[in-house]
Length: 557
Image (cartoon, rainbow, N blue to C red; front, side, top):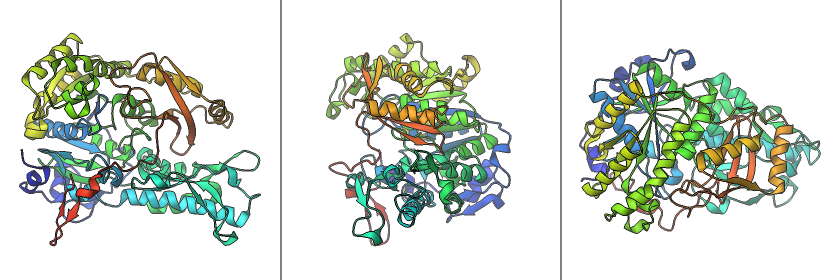
C-alpha cells in the first residue's frame, strides 16, 4: 500500500470555507490560517449552543509502543458515518512535537483515514501548543521574579515552589535542574525542572474551560507554591492570570481542518493521557455536538487511562455529556504481545497468543461496562493479519458477549468503517446506557485512588511512603479533597509496571508522589516510574525528517 504522504498527495484538499459550510459554520466565524485551516470564533458562548449530536468515544486496549490506531479509527469512523448519510465531525487532540520527533511520529491518522494538511497539523499548526508553553513559562518567570524581589520571607517560600517550566519536546536532561546560580543578580538558587507541555496544568485548563471567563478563573486558581505559614499561593496573588489569558486568547478557539474524505475535523488541545487527562477540548467537542449528528472523539492510550479520565474528569465539568457509545480499538498485534509474543514477532501468525492476550481486552471491556456505557470492539485490521487469527478474535468476542466489528479504514477509508458505524448505531438503539461515575467526589482522596486501582486496573491494593500519604492528607486539609484524581502511570500495562503485560492481578499499585492542579480541578497521582518529561528513544523519528530544496518535508509519518 502507498505511504501516507503519497495517498494524501493524490487527494484534492478542499478550501477550509467549503469544510466550514459542510459543518454548518458561518464563514464570518472563520479566522483563516492559510487555505486549509482556520480557527472557529463562535459569536456566542459555545456552552449555550444546543446539542443535537451523539458523542462516540474511541478508546483502546493496552497498546504496543506504536499504538493501536485510535486516531485512524476515529477519523475513518467519522467518514463512515458520512457515507451512511449522517452528518459527522471528528474531534481530536493536537500532536505534540515530543512524540512527533520521538518514538511515535505524527498523529494525523494513516492510510486512507487521515486529517490534512498533515505536516501543518503535526508541526506548529496554529500555534496553540506554543501559546500554552509561553503562558506556563510566563507564570514560572513571574514566580521567580517575586522570589528575587521579595526574598525568602516574601509571599512565596522559595523552598516550596511547585511550578516548573515546560517545553514541547522530549528532553530528559531537563527533568531536574538548578536555576538562579551565579550570584544575587540571577535570582534565588533553587532546584526545579521541566515537564513536557502536554503535561502542563495550563494545557489541561485550556481543554477544560468552556469560555474565556472560565479560563481566566482557572488560571488564577493555579497553586504555584506555599507561603511561610504553609498556605497555598495562587497565580492570582502574583497577578499572572490576566497576562496568561492574553497569551491564550486565540488558542482557546478550536481549529478546523478536514479528513481526506472532506469530513470536518476539530483539532484542539493536546494533553497526554499517561501523565495528564488525555482529551481534546470541551469547546471543540461541544461545538461539534451543536453542529453534527455524530461527534467522534478519542482519548489517549487505553480505557484505564484516557477513558477513565474522560468520564471522571472531563464529563464532571458539565460542559459535555457522557458518551452515547464507546469504541474499544484492538489489534491482533497487541493481543499477541499480551499473549506472550516478543514485540519483534507480533506480525507472525499465532492464534494461541491471540487467545492468551484476549484477557487484556476483556478487562477493558469490563472497564467500559463499569461506567454503564454501550460499547463496540473494533478490530483495527493490519495488512499482515491472517484470516485464521481474525476468526479466532471474533469467536472470542462472541463468547464474551461483546459487540465487535472489523475496521479496515486504513486501507479503505470510510468505506472500511461502515460495518463499525452500523454496529455503533445498533448499540445506541438497542443496548442499555446507564452512565455512572467511578466514585463520588466526597470520597477521601486515598479512597478515590484505590477505587481506580481496584476497579479499573485490577490491583489488589495501593501502597505509598509516609511522606506521600502526608501530602495527600495536607491537600485535604487545604480544601482540595473534593477534587477527582488524575493518575499518571505507564500506558503499556494495566498496572504501574511496563513489563506486566496481559491482565495482571493481585498486584499493588505503587503511588510515588502527588501534586495539585487546582486550576484544572484535579489531583495528579504519580505511580511507578512515570516521567512528566519523556526522553527520546535510541533512534528518534527526528532522524528521518528532512526538507527538500523546494521546501517539501520528508520523513514525517
